[in-house]
Image: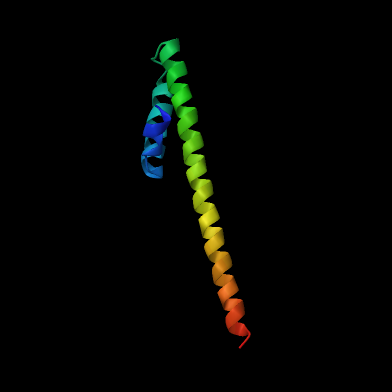
Amino acid sequence: MDSKMLETLSFEEGYERLEQVIQQLEQGELSLEQSVALYEEGVQLARYCGHKLDDAELRVTQLLSAADSLDSDDNLF
């Protein structure tokens, strides 16, 4: 899967595709070349999903920090 196509996927779509890749690899019915290509795709998908989760975690942390800051400001008055 090329990076442009990967970037268009939502987290859920990427994760679903990763699950499919894992399932195909676990079945063990692929040639060596097919297995390596699928493994490479799986690594790309895992990295992509990991980055998406990291981004979401950062956003949540920032929102919580901003909310805490607002609460602290309200307590000053």
